[in-house]
Amino acid sequence: MSVTTGLIARGPWDPSRVDVAWQPDPFEPSQSAIEAADQALAELRQRGSPSHDGLAARLVSFQADSEKLQLQLQPARWALRLIEDDISNSLSVLCLVRRLDRRWLAGRRAEWLATWAGRWALGAGGAVEVDENPAEAMTRELQEEWSVVPERYTVEALVGVPSGMVLLVGMAWLPDGASVTPDAEHDEYAWWPASTDDWPPEADGPLRTLAATLSAGE
Image 1 (cartoon, rainbow, N blue to C red):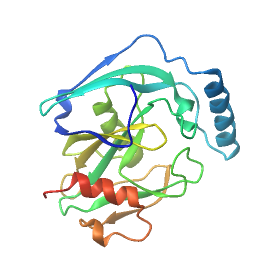
Image 2 (image 1 turned 120 degrees about the horizontal axis):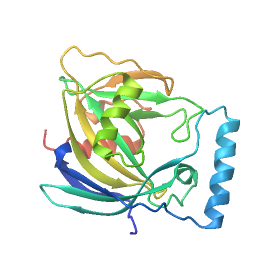
Image 3 (image 1 turned 180 degrees about the horizontal axis):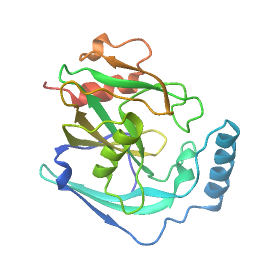
Image 4 (image 1 turned 60 degrees about the horizontal axis):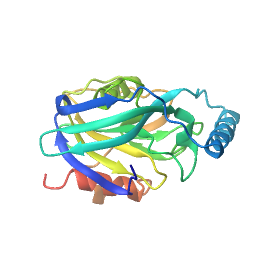
């Protein structure tokens, strides 16, 4: 399946309505992709990253309507997502986090990370483990990165990014009075205003576009 850049499918879907089928056989990349992934992983480790290679999810195909999102996934080498412009439909989750006052949780990512190093990002995200439902991966990442359990969350969209990666994007709401504790992947965090027009300069354009799209109609 060829993935285009931008919004691929739009929910929202209840997490219980995200169905997943895993193919048993891992994806077989080209030799050039293998070599490029090896090189990218070596460079990442030279920067002090503890990242380790393994298998994660890639998107094979999907079907979506107003009631359900169906995903067909396949194990693929994690390091393939490090190759610029050739990520082979590697799938990651991104769960945006909001408080009752509609502010957005933003964190500055550590310099040693594989993606968006030293830049501000929204919520929590990461790779989908083999045989894991991506909707469940969202809450796992929230607990790992911010030590928080959402009061409720929805699966909002499938989004293609220019590198060839696919993001399954969710929106989580925290209970009143909840606090977050960042993990080692973040060296600073902040609660950005409800309106993207009021966000600080460090908020990249893609973040503003994504948040504005998902909050349209509020």
